[in-house]
Length: 68
Image 1 (cartoon, rainbow, N blue to C red):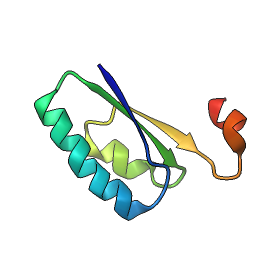
Image 2 (image 1 turned 120 degrees about the vertical axis):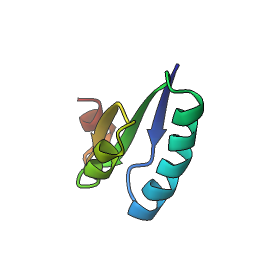
Image 3 (image 1 turned 180 degrees about the vertical axis):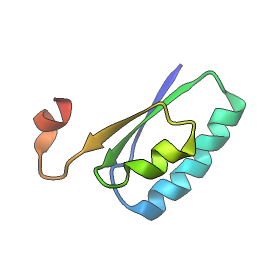
């Protein structure tokens, strides 16, 4: 199973979201969890230890730039 969290900005929301995602990871340790986040906030996700991949979202870049 895979989960993609789309929360690109707001450090406070990311911290609160990490708490919930961590609980999911504890209950379902085999689930892959990825996250879409604004550039500059990715380190907190990498440091969590349970986020598999981080997709960087650059505000103003548009959807096509994100897909690249």
